[in-house]
Structure formats: C-alpha cells, structure tokens
Length: 181
Image (cartoon, rainbow, N blue to C red; front, side, top):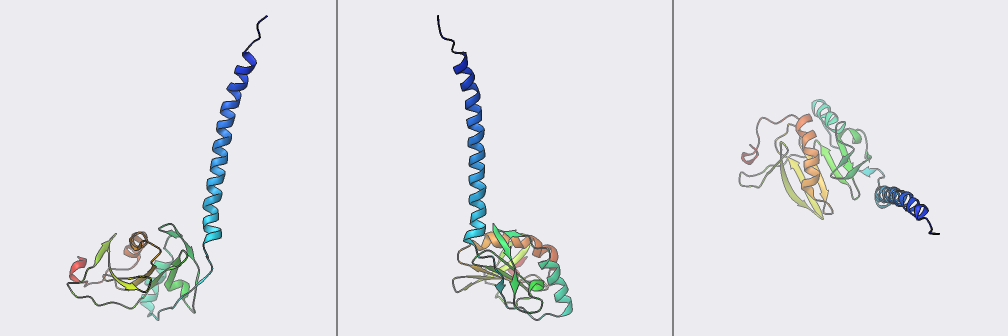
C-alpha cells in the first residue's frame, strides 16, 4: 500500500504562508524599533539654550505666528524645546542634535549686489560660514529670520523645510537685494 502524500502537501501549504507572515511582522517590528531607537537613544532632545532677540510688538506678533506654525520635524530632525528667557519659545525654534536653531527677529544682514543669494521655496536667503556650520539669514522678509545649521546637516534640506512656513507667515519686505527677485 502506497503512503499518501496529502499530509505533507497540507503541512507545506500551511507552513509557507505562515512563515511569510511571521517574517514580515518580525521585519516591521525590527525596523520600527530601530527607527524609534534612533530618535530616543541617539539624539539629545533636551531644551536648547538660545539667545532671544528683543522685538517690538509688531515683530513679536509676526514671530509668534511663525514659531507656532513650524512643523514638528524639519529635514528628518525632530523639534526640540528652547529656553533662554522670556519669549524664547515665541521667537526661536530648534531641531535635531546637534541643534539647528532658527531665530525670528535675527540681526539683518546687508549684502552687495554681487553677493550670492539663494531663493528657496519663495524665500531669499544669504549664507555665511559660522564656525563648524553655516548661518543663513532671510533677505526679503519684514522680520529677518536667521537659521544656524551645524555642519552635520545639509543646510538646503533644512531651509527647504522651513522656507514655506517663513514665506507664509513672515510678510515680504518692500525692498530686497537685486538677486532676490
């Protein structure tokens, strides 16, 4: 009498899909745990000590509109709390570790017509090296916005993430350098 192969076929038909589903679940679990660990273990998300600009009432309203509208993440960098005195969170935001720091009401910069300026998502920026990173300042806004980007990051990724909200919340200035139009 010949043995039936039916039990082996049934066992295989059940085992293969179950193994595939378990494999997918384990992969997803490991991937999400690794992503979570990157944010929780590798980055210091404690408050960032910042300098707070002194602003007039109109500038303060503009800056509050900006800081209350920035996304929770820019260029893959999570937002961090800031501290440094009265109005720190109303005028300054920070992201990532080391911290990218964006200050509304930054010191304006003067540029020559021959200087390189960069139009990114509707905002005109000027860049200057700042130690181990770069300092970017808007040139075409009523209230200047400065962004300090550590050398660990691609500044253009950060600025492209911030520029749409800057363009939306900080009114354009009546005059801007030649290269900004």
